[in-house]
Image 1 (cartoon, rainbow, N blue to C red):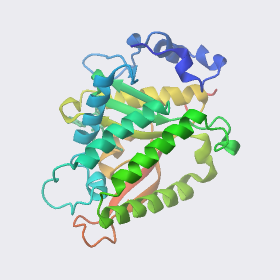
Image 2 (tube, helix red, strand yellow):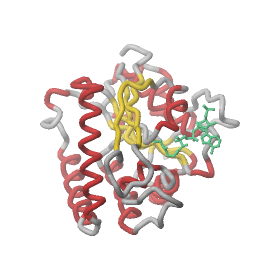
Image 3 (spheres, protein in one colour):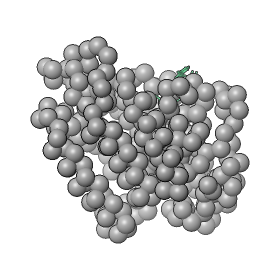
Length: 274
Ligand SMILES: CC(C)(COP(=O)(O)OP(=O)(O)OC[C@H]1O[C@@H](n2cnc3c(N)ncnc32)[C@H](O)[C@@H]1OP(=O)(O)O)[C@@H](O)C(=O)NCCC(=O)NCCS
């Protein structure tokens, strides 16, 4: 698989003059970032429909990476005590649906090691003021198909999960509004980063994060994310992210036995001007 310039249409031609991103766009197999943790550098590739096997692996990576994650367990309707419960079929389908939606919508899904590590990056709208009007027809169709499928899956979920999801949405919106305000429309967003548990600690996540950072640098944009917990903060700090806000969930839910879940909102400012 190779990554072609056309797939990254959000970059203007002049922006391709930046050398390291040109490497990934023209011959992704050689894209390497210095990573002190890696014993060997691997090529970052874009996840596409051409590699259905990798999509399956990526969905599995997400499921396994977040299995013990408190944020995920909360949204899955668990009480947080003891070992995580068995993952429902609905959640498995959702992981696969998520991968399908990101690829179909042409979000930037980069992977390493055949889907055992992946990052999902959402572009900033080219014209933030008209962001909703400028969405492509493809993106609108994909979003609607995905929404219908999601609503169908939601109908199998208990009310408690629906309530927690509403709580999450409200806490998320509040944290973004107070920490980023309108600036959020000019920023790139890391929607998800995951490495399969057996592959963690080898520099894969760091390499993908640096790659996302470099992409944002090319556009002179900041990137933001919400970490699923405080445990990842040192990792993100090591890759240039700083905490600028916080989302808190689980502090009023009586069925949740692990207390509030603090999810830092972090930003990485661009290091290269456009
Ligand atoms: C966070 C995550 C993506 C990092 O991916 P990774 O491929 O392990 O990342 P790296 O190997 O580049 O670096 C991981 C850092 O955590 C440490 N680490 C994480 N997991 C480790 C493990 N299983 N073994 C050893 N070290 C580990 C590394 O030492 C390194 O820390 P340092 O650079 O400060 O010394 C991965 O741990 C993960 O998928 N976690 C579960 C899902 C999650 O929390 N995603 C982020 C949501 S915000």
